[in-house]
Length: 416
Ligand SMILES: CC(=O)N[C@H]1[C@@H](OP(=O)(O)OP(=O)(O)OC[C@H]2O[C@@H](n3ccc(=O)[nH]c3=O)[C@H](O)[C@@H]2O)O[C@H](CO)[C@@H](O)[C@@H]1O
Ligand SMILES: C=C(OP(=O)(O)O)C(=O)O
Image (cartoon, rainbow, N blue to C red):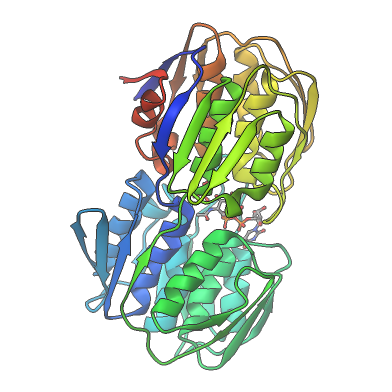
């Protein structure tokens, strides 16, 4: 199993290009199932999850051709409507084929994702939404089997804000008969990126970016070209890494508007931030100040940045409270950070972090994607060598992370 070895204590300095967003790329790739014409996607990140989604779509009969920096998908020969357990267990986002398949082909069989390291993560809201649109759903042998002659528009209220739930139903509604209104919908920028792609394909969607999204179904969607938005979580991760190491970095091809709360928290921690066009520059001198964070759906602080801020707080001046309100088990990184010398107490969904002057390198284990990113940041700060095991989690969501960090001066290498 591959590991990362980091010699810490070097401030990150330099420039780095931000990749396309994993969480926008995955639903948008599934939108290729909604049309028989060609969907051309640019700025797709080279990530393990993108490879898995491409393989899943190909298994269904979608043709996927790569040219420099883009992939074209063509769904004119889709002959399988099944997402098998093997695929879904490695990538929960595979659930996003459910809405498009039942909307276009009237039939879909998708493995239930089950829980994962960060929580139980049910998909009941996806299922209830499709049922409200007239789908008949049976749960058999660990699979969701959905059938519908043609989905019908419906008014659907989400009890809990769900990002992929919103995206799945938005795609299903695009080909339904009549108007669908999604209430208490997710407002994440990736939902807006999907809506932009669907509109380019001829869908009638409005209200994305607010908590009420209205979709008027059409008979058919057509081909389109769409550029995947920049990854706000990758951007935030590099900024926190620079702040924690007392460095100075410039991110290119990113977007400050979708990072508002993260930039506010970094400023509160003492970083100086300048935004110009699609670049963000961060400079940090001295020790960061501890900052409280509380995760919640967009536009509040993102859960996918919680672990990285925990690493920053570990070496900050003062104490901070980190409250996780989205996932019930997203503190798995705490015990690994403690191995590096961090002082963290956890009670329920709240962690109290008391900043220490220095962390010390050790061998640690990554448990999920953002926990891995948090350990990389801690390793960049710690004195001596940190070895991070199980880094396959990192490859799901960070494009060429060690070469990007090396470019910024970090001493980091992949070992067997
Ligand atoms: C591929 C992708 O975009 N992944 C993101 C997406 O995950 P994902 O879309 O899976 O997360 P959700 O927004 O659905 O989850 C939010 C909360 O709702 C609960 N829930 C969700 C659906 C459901 O049917 N029933 C239910 O109870 C979940 O268990 C969780 O507690 O949003 C999360 C929250 O911003 C991010 O951490 C993930 O990176
Ligand atoms: C939790 C995440 O992803 P996923 O929903 O794909 O597991 C993440 O990107 O941090």
